[in-house]
Length: 322
Ligand SMILES: [Zn+2]
Image (cartoon, rainbow, N blue to C red; front, side):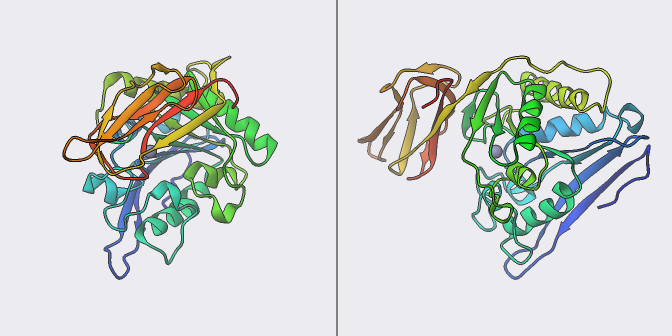
């Protein structure tokens, strides 16, 4: 990674070397280094390659922030998962079938997804002081905006991560208490930072493969809020004083393969027992009706017909602890 001198910007592509069975990958990045020292904020887009709002959002951000505008360093990863982006896949890499955001911290001699994770861990997370992993609803997910706050690990890091979530400004924050604390088995990108003592959040803006102005605005507002919170800029949106804390959440999963018909809508409330969606076979017979296990709000709902047994069909969140 090419670190520019103070007051300069550098661009490049991190190589993920080829191995038998694949041709490797490239991870394009931009580093904007202010004239004075300060935090090193890593913003990662495209961990899931069909989550386009973060990818386009960082393209726009790069063109609107100059080194003279910031203290510290902004490290932009434009597309973390290039095989998935160019292959137009949701969830999984078209090369190895793995979900990049489940294989962190990665392996230098592993599958392509594991090698991408390893490069991000060593080149990006190792250099950062703070990390925001920018997601959205995947190409098949209808999603309301929210952030994840991972509470596990060091209390100071946890408190700093909470402040990042409030600074990013999305009204709904999922309180994520169950993440691994082992740095060697961190699983998720943001948790890889947290298990290394660096505050981090995951954010969700945009969905369904659509790059819409409102979602781009939320993301831009979020990044500028974090920059202000970290003292990297003087002006910017103020952090939220309160949020809707989602203390309990569940990802509902398909018990069958077939056609999925959503019933619930993102951002809408569902009562315990309400049908969230149904799955039929290819001859129209209902195989399953999936219901909300508790009163809550639909954080996202799968909104395209293909469904495989075991895959998520939606997520219910509640501000009440379970
Ligand atoms: Zn994602």
